[in-house]
Image 1 (cartoon, helix red, strand yellow):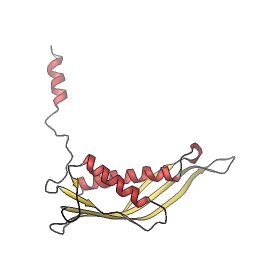
Image 2 (cartoon, one colour):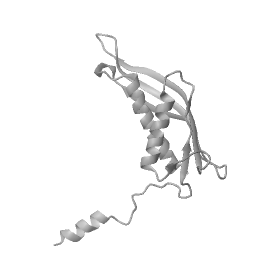
Image 3 (cartoon, helix red, strand yellow):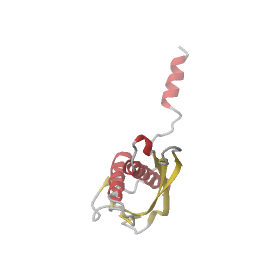
Image 4 (cartoon, one colour):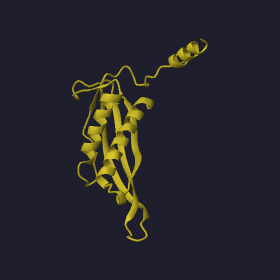
Length: 159
């Protein structure tokens, strides 16, 4: 008998909302294809695709053409650096490879021209393990997904 009110109180919480703090005056966003200074194939495509999917699933915003969008998200992949974290004693092959991806991005309100979020140098680190058949490509896919998650988080907290 005593447990029912406690369980109900626990399940309803203390009046806090689980919604994320996105701006309500922005309804639509246009995501331009990210540019890249790197000579690695398709990184900019992967990042842009991952970002569009994440915006569609995790934010209240809709993706729209630039001519009708409220905001514009642009960016560029500046650098991808790999470094070996350790080598196998017998083979000399890398045990783990860390990848740093450096990007810049800007979110601009197209109606007012105001810069809403700007990160001129944003670094994301990922790693992969060649000895278990992980590849650079797989590591970069995880990095692009992680970057898109971080960009969406910057959109909610950076405003």
